[in-house]
Length: 186
Image 1 (cartoon, rainbow, N blue to C red):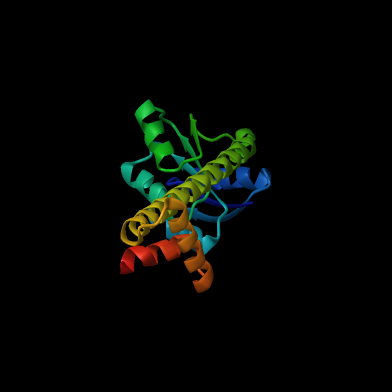
Image 2 (image 1 turned 120 degrees about the vertical axis):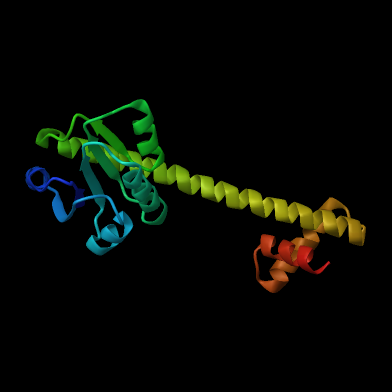
């Protein structure tokens, strides 16, 4: 597992990197802060990000939010503080695991594995949501096109649907694309 380690304290980072290596991880890069996290992840091709931050700043959390949007990866955040608002902000930024009271070598591997599983489950839900949204949007376009055909051509709903299907087949496009053409030309 390729890990990007984010830790502002060089001595602690070296100890954490050793602990990660002992746990079977390949530390591919060490960063002093979470700034420009997306670029660092792309350059290092890290699979997991482990952040050992005393007190995650808003900038660090924003960098994690951008990473989650542009290059989603499991992020494990070890912190010394754990106020509910801070944990909530971290989770909203895409952090898969927020561990209070710092990083200890014997906890590293299990926490990373849980974070990876949680991240994957979240990604599945995210993909399902996107698919559902796209399906709903297509359905709305198809319904609007059927309504337009029913109104302008005096067709029943079933006839309008058949006409849309025929148009899609004749043009070799999806039904929603044919419906979009009806809405754009009639």
